[in-house]
Image (cartoon, rainbow, N blue to C red; front, side, top):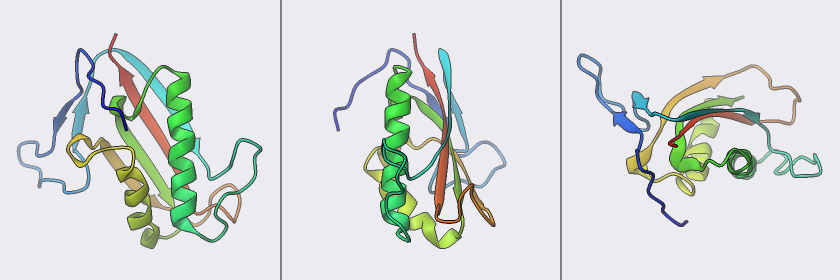
Length: 138
């Protein structure tokens, strides 16, 4: 993926004083600019059809593609994302989610993150939903 520099990169604080360091995310990410909130995205294609029935990896890939498109609509990219929230129906899906994330976000630019296991998403066939907050430097 093409790497582009913003005039002001988000600042990442992986280990705030007195907080155990994080391996898979940054504890704190600060940015200045235009705030963009992206609703939780689901594993649906542009026609609203489920992608990857029963397959958390395929669902995660579609969710990240939908996030990419939503960010693009706001003039943003994954470089601008400061926070991701993952909702999964089973924590066992997280490695598949991380693999999908890795194709869009390098390990040295990880956003702040929260991962939550939920008893259900809006439809029973959905295994993964992810929302994003971004700050686009002006």
